[in-house]
Length: 468
Image (cartoon, rainbow, N blue to C red; front, side, top):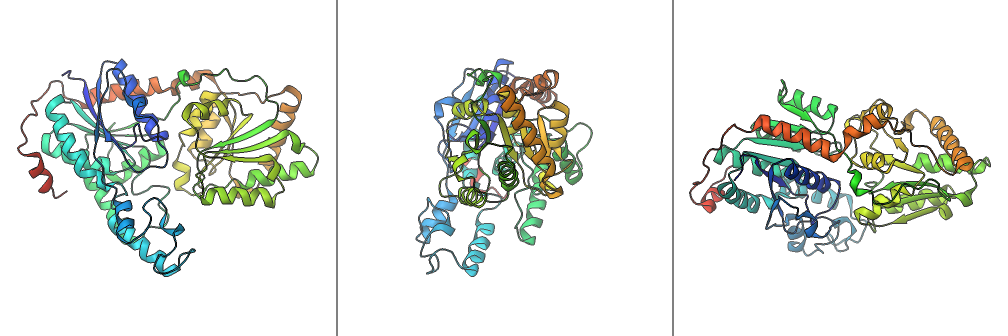
């Protein structure tokens, strides 16, 4: 095989859908065009609410190895007599109680989850991925291993493969591990264990890739990695994915949010309040505005929260919600919107995050209205690109309301809101350019020549004796 073969270990790849899948899929596609041979290791069937056609991952120049997968959470629920396809908190007969589950039951279940699902809910993939990864290295002789998280189980697999074969390894963190902005309720023992396992695991990597400067700084401080070992490769957009021409005008003033809100942790309430006040003042005609929430999981607390906000603010008739749509439909709806809404958790950790959907907004060439921590990565990126406006609702909603008023009046007078994104900045944020950056980094990490990684003994014995 070519000395530019890379073994890419990624849980999120077709048939699993989502923003994490897109990053690996686009890297594989464009690395192949740049002369690399990506060999993608991924589950044939995982546990994820959003799926797509697995054929979407079958790309020219890319080899895909789909492994087995053991779904630990579903198996656990089946063992205690619950429906494996529903969240525990939504099921009757949990400890003899009907919903809502008692506080004691919730604590018990949370403790069980922290013990069984370490380091994450996809630990059941480890054995199959390790077995198939060893076989792939023996067959394809990759110059480098590339693992992508979440889930961090991918890094445990890559770490073990490097120890066995000596193949150089680059770990990509699309979200942080122990500093993950969504880990807000872990017990102290679990936090300490996460930190220890993270350091032991990632310190064995030959290089790290992440998606923001703040993430890189946190990783550098935690792991002591300096001197160019951490590469920042932002998410991006692919101009070729946008099949429709961006509409010059919109018949209504359409504000759209794409994806889940994760309960109430990403709260659109300030937008509802601002629009309600503008309607009350006579600025906005309620018959000419739409608040669209696309991709809210059916039966989720996010869906309930949006419904309550619409009712409380009197905006039920202008609020629409819908479930998951395919990727092309999602992009088309973004292009047909007037303004695109982005919301991040309002914490210090949230300030480090640049959601992948922001780059889709850039590709759709629609202005972004962002509710994010002040001074964080999103605000800085919007300032540098001219792609929209960022507001921290904790500092008040007056500026948000004023911007919505100005944008609505611009739409009323012209039929649209102008996207002021700076082309010279945005052209550096395409998926192709990200792949070029990754290719250069992999070439720096990979050895000049190939070693012969052919004989590891019995693969099953290696896995059974694993003491990772």
